[in-house]
Length: 115
Image (cartoon, rainbow, N blue to C red):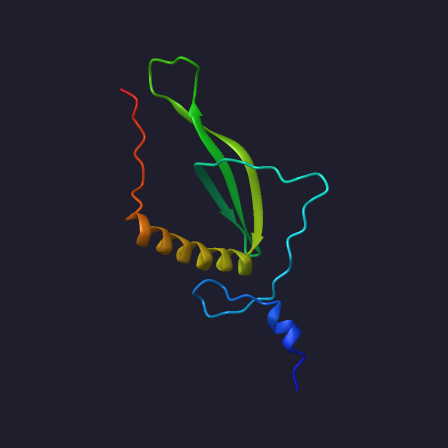
């Protein structure tokens, strides 16, 4: 006998393309609001317990510099359990696949190098 009733089945949504049906929890707005952060640079570190992703934005190293020098200014960091990191990987793979099907292959950008 299982605890899975029809009501519980309706609260689950399939993970994109993975054939899995993880339990879903409704998103509740934070009382303090959600901070929106733009990132175009990532840094990673890990332990046997979790993965840490550091989000940064590449910006000019100095204002009005004649030489193209850039730094990655850290904006936020998130630490995930390995199970969540794998789930994120699977979902991102499906999202990228769907995006490229419509818009063509994503090509990594090249930064200008100092002369």
